[in-house]
Length: 317
Length: 293
Image (cartoon, rainbow over all chains, first blue to last red; front, top):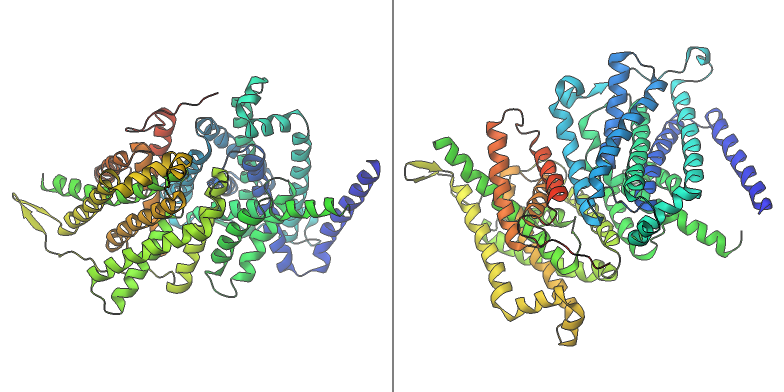
């Protein structure tokens, strides 16, 4: 296995180099798009963790993204907390919110959880509209554009700085997640997903593991929400409707729920599919997403990344 | 008094709309054990069809009848083409497929009819009725009458006809029914058709109130979920009672509790869903689920 490990390290180093060097060579609009890819990938990673690994479906991840975005925007705008410091704080708030919902989710299985999280996703925008004093109501909150720290000004632009932060977080969170899932924790989650009764009989604590998965996943969605809010420099209730939750779930399913690489594939799909499809018709992305979801569930339930891994294994690449 | 009576009646009217949609969800749940998240969007598309028919000069009631027929045929075809391949898959798979249908229908409606909100003609007279000195909106009464008639017809079908018996048998005991010569797949498709008819009734009734656009049914679907959960998701009677209760409750809360207003009505529905699922998952009329270990 050491040969394949070396090769993996080389591939990883190559990917890091390419991603770090990209801002020098591609137009700034592409960098801006890649920031979105990274942010979506982090949200989808959380969803893969929750739905794929722990078997709890969430149709309401947009709600966590919304909370992350709003918390970050409020922190930056009214408390003077720096942009970068706002990211872990928003993640923490989202994690606690996820923990609370995780306790509710313990009582709900399968489609009941789908139902409750669906209602959460639909209820979030009007709720944010209602508490105008904090959230700015329908207008939302505008932020000053993202800027690089003083030491780096003139060398890289704010957009490039956000791109670098985003992709460092993507890499870091992917590594952390894959290490955490490789051992006992990952086995316990999968056991609870595949055979809850047997898992509990073997001493796996369902309360601990399921609520942990919920909080963990929500924290990732919070990070994604923060990055998206910074990238657009704006949060508003209508950006976080059910469509966002559905888009994230579609990204996770199309990317592949069974592997963490699905997050990267899903992030690319979620950013670029609407971008291209919109050129045909404003409604085309929905139609393409919907049909792709149905086709993938019927013919290729492992998703894009899952199919790619399977292809590689079959051909011993 | 006048105001309260009016609010209760209009709560019953929206409640009977929720009840129709909740019943559609319950029909699918009983036959397949899944929730059809696309139910609301299917209803939205059929409502657009009704609107298109009225635009070319078809009288509203005839357009309504044609729409119901189209809804039935469309849903049977949909079940045949899309749902049958995943009929035996895990519930999560079916849920994601219905979500795929949700997005597809939303996109198709946006593509064909656009996202501009359109008015929808009401099939009922505009003059209020004077009942014992209290003026009641005729539209509200009409909605209640149509919805209750539809609910009654469905319950007669299930309780009093051989076809209804076969459908119930196919839903509860598919293997045994097949052995007795019932075409189980055909019964499932029929269930989808009937659910779509209920959805179409809901859509045409609600469109004059919420107006017509591709996202019109999303809020209604949340209320219908809340109604179905409140009544017990396996119980048709529960869906109706849950829908009416929810309609009146949300309307009164939204009108008289200023802190809730219009924005937080959906939040109330969400809170009801979560509270019922956590504290009494079988709802008001459902039976507690037992699991053999």
